[in-house]
Length: 84
Image (cartoon, rainbow, N blue to C red; front, side, top):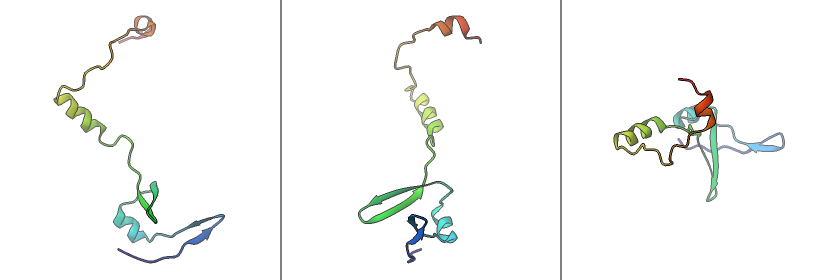
């Protein structure tokens, strides 16, 4: 869907009104990301920061890549305070 609209004054800022149908078609939610590039302002859905982590961890485990990178160093907490 391509449409033409005007930039409007909103307080000390400027903004555009996005039609509901366009928001739904783009799959936008309450939080979005804005990016300026090559004469365009790109509006996109804000990604969830940990999207796909569970699947990536499972795949790493299946490839035996989920190993400790640093040696285990016990602390006083481990010896004195931790309870199973």
